[in-house]
Image (tube, rainbow, N blue to C red):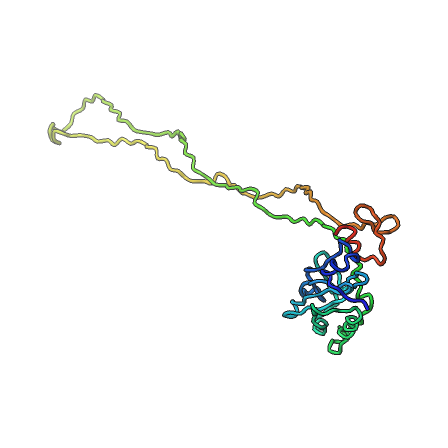
Length: 282
């Protein structure tokens, strides 16, 4: 009956099983059904005879105050630094035993406990599931990621137009025709008799004649001489943005075999997504 060993301890006891570049999911973020965050991956248990990861140690602190459980590795979907358990529910985790750091787990014993936990009567009927051997295989789906450019446009103030007015003073000449009266004295010699006597009207008899003249008076009236309207026009231009993006491509040879970065053939039985990542130096 094969035993299960913590991944962090296997280097000292079974180095030959996993080599130097094995995949370690420890401290990655864990998500349950509907991508609900449930906690962290605290480590993994591997089979002592094959070195295969069989269980992930999940700290379900997002669902419970403190509870670590063993979840079959095949139920996981690994994407970058995130581990998704697409079918794992809070009720299922509640039915699982708490992981004991000091207990020596065996593959067969834990397999039987899984059968009980995932088919327990306490679970809703829609959450019960049969655990098959495939549930204990490390994820064999490798997701190839690529970066894509998203271009947004920000509106900024590119210029400011101010329109005002000021007063300009200038002298303007205006020609006006004016009239004025001047005295014109005409003396005519007369020789006719009169009954008047010298001195009858006083010694200072005078005649007054008003002389009129026109004077210029200037008035200023205000008129609207010009109207100024300020509007905006929109011009379009094209800018070319250069950015470097990355994508992941699978390394295979012409026969469909997985190769590493140096082109060496990776030849192992039952190759998994973890093996692909190791071969590519991930």
